[in-house]
Length: 375
View 1 (cartoon, rainbow, N blue to C red):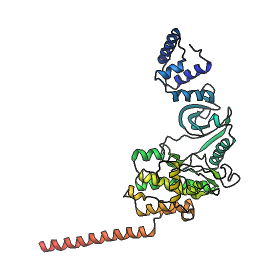
View 2 (tube, one colour; view 1 turned 45 degrees about the horizontal axis):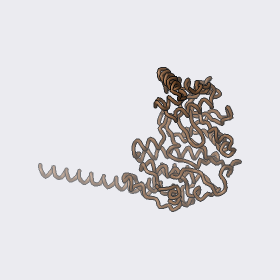
View 3 (cartoon, rainbow, N blue to C red; view 1 turned 90 degrees about the vertical axis):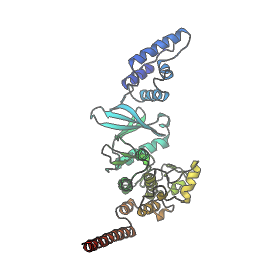
View 4 (cartoon, rainbow, N blue to C red; view 1 turned 180 degrees about the vertical axis):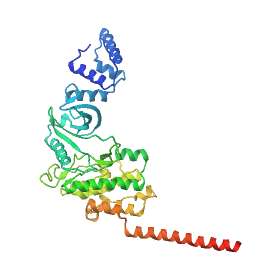
């Protein structure tokens, strides 16, 4: 049998603490390891746990990563790590508790394999700095940031979710009023960020997460751009960053002078998704998607959701104009457009109510005459 290392013992201990396995299962795996040794086969307890289907390979890899990251697999600086709640290209996010304050947080830790990449490390630090500048009820709060065991991290507000994407997917589509309420709150958050010279550059439904009271909060400022000392510092000439489904045309073009209007485009695409349950553009490849963003041939959201008002259709189209000069120029203008529908829509609404009122009055008078005749 392969000799059990301290790391192997720690992984099993951590799996027990997280209740991924039971002591009985560990004992059974030890017996299997002994039997395997008798017939000349070598296997660790971890390997047997995976082969028996008790834990998955992904779970085992996460446990190994936690053991490398934190002392005893759980202690990371002043934090005790809990469940892995998310991961991406930059790093992983763990639920954790501050040992002294007792505060539950979400800790984002940059991946070990990219820690030495100066560009990625700089981008991560920039996310910390961007969040530390922002204080808004619709932006996730950052509590702490730094470097522990040669790993960059920051601790932020723990949001139970779901994300807007998961919420829309569960309901298929949102009602117009609810969708506008969420987008309005996010526009206010982005307006605050823009006032602090911070452009998000990667707004999408996955980055809007609800807190325990159902308040939407904007997260993931990993691709943020500062319009002060750090302006143009993270993207190579001619390159672009962002999500295929929500990226603005000027980002696709690789323009360097990205500003808040790119966030307006992405938020418009996010509103489209909330209203229809579909992305504004689809394609069989990233190249096809990017070309559609540049073409601007947007299918009206009303085709997918006939109940959407014309005013909201105009709102989406203006937010997603290919030419950024034709979009709303600020998030404040977006909020104002949501709060104050176009005059024609208000006139038509008033005219409709007047017509209904007139018809009801006429029917009342007709009914009154009919009653008199019958008498």
